[in-house]
Length: 339
Image (cartoon, rainbow, N blue to C red; front, top):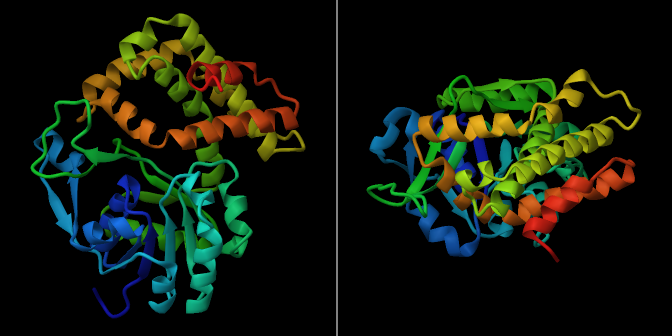
């Protein structure tokens, strides 16, 4: 760490927060985590990662130790100023336990004007954060990686020790948008740590649209017991997922463009999510991914299942608000959450 190192606090040391933390520290940042008390000792003693782009199926461990680990917002307030606060939690966790009011109050007490980095996928997450911090202090991001707790449950994966495995799809970049100076500083911090990143026009819109395509297919996959084979053999379920993706993207476009000025891309996003394309992704992805893709979906999206249900519920509620069809979304939810 240098004397002028960027001070970064990451909220959450799960699969996403661990990967970002690793690369931010590699880039020279003074890295701290805020975690729940029962995770404090685990994170303080160091985190293990497996960079699959480098090690592939060999699972070579790399280890890093954060500069500080906090388990209460009072500890954060006493630690002084931070340059960036990364909220690496789920969209539902963002809304639990008074996290944002408590954290933003603690940061205000410590002084400064940090950048708030928001890579969560919720459609209304930015607006929620803007209730507590200045809007121009928010940099929104799109997570362009696969990360998970290894070894994957239900797979034959073997690792020397438990850790977080991650993979950056070839050509992909972590994308961020916001006030120019702040967004460029976030990207620079990642790039310095050899994590490809870029400033884009509207990361929030990209993330919301991508999530609207993905969530109905995740629900369909869950309804098929997380089995690619089972899902591919149920054309009615695949068709329902495709209709759900089209409905969800139409809802997002209407919500983001209330005056009806949606772009051509908005209209195409849901239509490209056709059953044949999903079959292709499942077949090719399962062969090329350096991890068990099916086990990854089952493990990771069961873990954040409350987030998926929350987002589906919001698509339905917003669809009704904007007078958009949501029948397929309802039918999908009934397959996994009849109540």
